[in-house]
Amino acid sequence: MRPSWLARTLIALAFLATFALGVLAHRSGLFEQVAKYGADIAFLSRQHMKLVAISGGLAIAVGVPLGLWLSRPSMRNMAEGVMQVLNLGSTIPTLAVIALAMSLLGIGVVPAIFGLWVASLLPIVRNTYAGMLGVPAYYIEAADGMGMRPRQVLAQVELPNALFVMFAGIRTALAINVGTAPLAFLIGGGGLGELIFTGIDLNEPGMMLAGAIPTALLAVLVDFLVGAVSFWVVPRGVNPLR
Amino acid sequence: MITLDNVTKAFETPSGTVIAAQNISMEVQDGEICVLLGPSGCGKTTTLKMVNRLIEPTSGRITIGGKDTAAYDPVELRRTIGYVIQQIGLFPNMTVEENICVVPKLLGWDMERARKRAAELLATINLEPALFLKRYPKELSGGQQQRVGVARALAADPPVLLMDEPFGAIDPINREVIQDEFLKMHRRLRKTVMFVSHDIDEAVKMADKIAIFRAGKLEQFASPDHVLAHPANRFIADFVGADRTLKRLRLVKVGSAVETGWPTVTAGDDVARALALMAERDHKYIVMVDPAGRPQAFLARDACRDQNGPAVKHSLPLPATVRLDEDLRSAVSVMFMHDVRWLACVDDDGLFAGYVTQPGITRLLRQTYRGSGVEPVA
Image (spheres, each protein chain N blue to C red):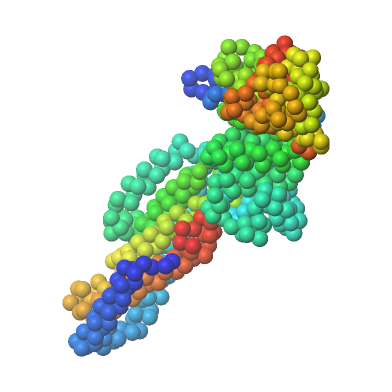
């Protein structure tokens, strides 16, 4: 990835703004207020990451095979219908999904993970499906004609060519997941939402920021990690970034 | 040898049964190029794909080298048949080397041998291995991609090659070059090739045999010259074009049309001798050669009449000569260019070898119309 001069300028400006904000925060004594919650931040961040890792991991584990399955020729007739249902699912606000999960599964970690899983499932399925359908038919014809078995066509031709689009879906899904995870607190799932929502309720900006800043950092970190993985895993011939 | 025996393919569609290929019987001899020709939807691609069983025939028998293809596992069968498609279909996620190694790997070759083979094949298609092996398809031009596509089909050295409009997507100039390269390679490798095309010029150029299809039926199966000289029906006559006689010129070498045994004179001969030679055979012209036998000039009977002195004094320059291994189309083109009705021919050493004349060419084409046969371009 080679950022353009515009992107570079923007990045520099963002750094400057962050620095200025930091100075301001320091002056107002916000740092001390946030630092008070150091132990809570460490504990809740771990919880938060666990929520994200489990629900995101499950979403990938289910979404990718589901998308692959829907893209098989034998499923062509049904696939569009299933995608419509999933699309409908994505229009339901995540908060509502979490509320529904609670009414179904009670309170605690399990319904929180379930709600996050539902919210991040769709982009993965949709992009896997679209990525697979986007592989031109003549690659598959060439592979068949050369004597590849269906499994070999899938592994050597279809998947590598769909991978870039699939990774875009995973990236979107995990971004949604990290951003939504604070809501887990509302149904007793824990995580950094505890500091954010309690901070808001008590009108305590230090507490709120103690939750919000790590959440934001976590979102950036996850996005960077998925980006890096897709950069190295997607073969160079079909990776527009390399 | 590929044999199709009464092969039929019927597709069941919601609007009823569609016969894509009906009772096709044909034979492609070892080392021959057979071009399946016809308008779109005529069944030529269906017929091709039945050979490697990408499409299963509804009835009939296809054998390759005497063995029934139905007896194979279709996937195993395809690994023994080279396959090239119009869109080339190089896998963009693989390097050129990996693309060429696909079939060898499927056949379980060790990587060392497959890699060596890939480098060797790239060299034969005039792509420097060191430069191209590690490139991705997107880093090649269209023509280079198509060459790699052919190399990939040849990787495991299959005896049979199926090509579905392989040069259809390449610009006309590069297409000529790649066709010539392919023919050159074919003369060396002698694969049995089935080749789908909708371009009559390409078919005439490439084919040992042309199979013309219409609406699922094989209308004519013959050598290019035979198809051009004796189209079996109105449809084929229209399909090969009103200029089919001109197309035939391309199939015949000057050597087949040359008239030999005509007398020549040398620079020192007397004009009277030249006139006598012309009068003896009732010719209007005579070629003057140098002592080695290379044509230098010619004398015209009308201009020499009642003249005397050495022949060289009355000679006129030759407008052009043609080589025996050029095709008649070039010869006729040269005739039209210089507005002459005959040309002196030279052999490989540049020695005078005879004449081609317009009446002679016409006579030759007429002879084949009667079926006596012209030696086609090998």
